[in-house]
View 1 (cartoon, rainbow, N blue to C red):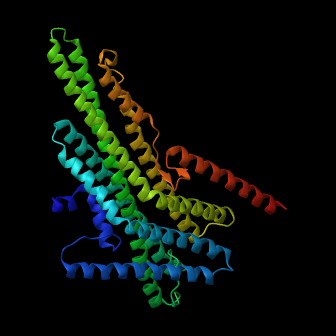
View 2 (cartoon, one colour):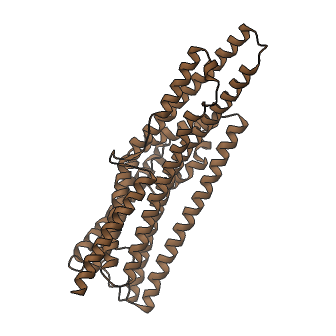
Length: 402
């Protein structure tokens, strides 16, 4: 069971985070446990050292606006990803508990239609993951190729800003710095991609369970409608069927509350990291926008736009996935609207009303109770940023004209 869980479609990204030293690993072998703990400490020190080097580089270039804006972008990006995954690593045992619950829920399904729904969403997640990996590989490839081209065409630029006691004008020292930057950049990108995909996987698993519940409710409603169309059912059999239907309805109510509890746990685990991610996205957009509007094109301009687009797209996908999840949850209330509710017994009507009432309660995922994560929030943030950058551009234009 445990081996199958580790090889599960939605566990692959958590396993990748474990290989990066960012996730917990439960093992009964004390030697392996100590070795893994040492590896996690090494990975953490590596990240902290690189972050400190980025802050030092930011301090060294404090008098040069061009360098400060670029260094600030890379420092924000790396520090945000490090802090986010450090926090999630502290909650890894609890998150793994939620993962186990969702995995066991999937394994309990034995109906053909339910298994088909699970497989369908797993295929969608695999396609989604391949798209993210391909995008990350393309970003890294362009990142490394452009850096190497500066070796020949100049001026020499290293895209990931960290301080190194090296003179990059020397070819040998440039290659050493390039390798260090490539390792650090690859680690950050792998960290960011797998942490996001792990959360998307949890969202998709919960949506799958809501989809299964909605289908079950529709099936029950159809069966109940057929049951009342039959006129030659005797009184005792009618009571028996009514009680059986009511027991199924109670199971649906219990399942609905369990899924809502999964959503509550997911928000508890991720609401602080999401606020951090939203703050980084806004900061990168502002710094990059000010930089682009206030200077001519250069290589650092290209890198900053790349970082900003990457984080913004990531936030867009997150908000889209959350909307995607709650769209399925809202269907619960509609699943019983076509039932002959007026022909039900009073106690069955009561259970039906409970389901509709629970489904009508608005649920949402938030960034530390401040921002609701949905497409409306995302579009509102983009609109506000566009207005501020347009104002800044107007000020810069008037300043240049004078």
